[in-house]
Image (cartoon, rainbow, N blue to C red; front, side, top):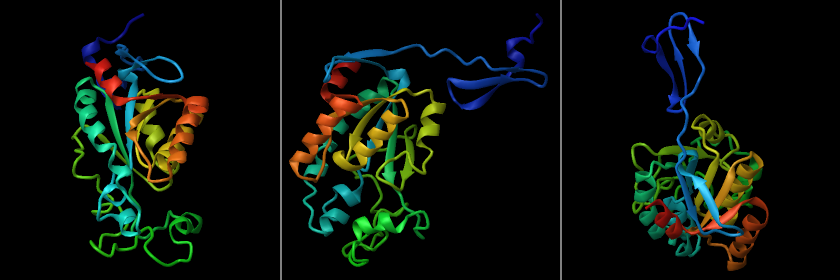
Length: 260
């Protein structure tokens, strides 16, 4: 069989390991092999080994409106101290995760200014009487519209830095898979395992993790990098359900040690 020389082909594809090679006369569909980068760490319900090169760390909603003293939740009387608990563990984990080649996805609320993709049932959660401060409403202190894309409210807290190679995806539901490109991006990158961090653990983190499980991804909740402003029993139930039904629970300090 006669084939064209390799150097006559051009690369076609946005993901390093999901590219065709094409020329004027031929197409090579063979992708580059992914060399495994296994790391092992303690987890529940079982010890865990994962492949960093097929994994992504998804950080959910570590935004001013959820975690800042002048953000939305604080403005309506919620104590955001628990929501800030993941900041320090994430600061410690992220440099090591990036250095190991791990992919990082920031998955955040980023609503349209006209709210045309938000149903009344979703708006009702935050404005049950169509009054008060809800999605898109200017905050009393800063004037920033709640969780609107591009606003201070929707920005990631200043203590956490988004690197140039990190991936940013806006969401509009508690699950990050509905009406977003998250699944398409992960599949294009060849990702099969997802590690979850952020707030609120029992709401947006859990909903996204459940959908990831339903779609066939391996799911790991980093317990010390996830938190909630809900009552403690909500966190307990979240950890129980992840271990029981949807995946694994681990700690970032163990992951960091394994990566090193």
